[in-house]
Length: 153
Image (cartoon, rainbow, N blue to C red; front, side):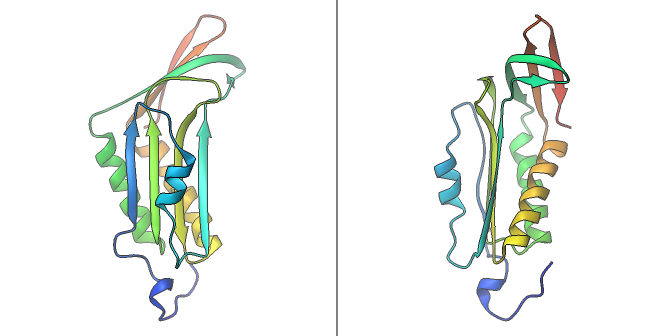
């Protein structure tokens, strides 16, 4: 992490977690980007996960996401860990559940920090930990008629 100076804008914000949600509706890049707007941030990193048309050499037609009732609480825990490790000024994470088509937005996370390097690192940590620790599962439907459940945890 980069050295900090005494200016308040160089420090983590008091309430940096601006938006956390699991939704059955379309995700909005504009909403998430607005949520992490911060005048003291010099860097904002945004990750967008989309439904791709293949996985493991097979063509994917569609997929569905479902989650455990604890998923939002686990998402908050992951976000709080990121905020504790990096000088996060603003953070947002939204994951979609339900039936999605190829090209749909599945997850969007964004982090604003005083500097770009911190923003990149914090955003990477946020999406990686979200995918590994939050109980959200993916049910893929392949073109050949087969199906597969993929656990995020």
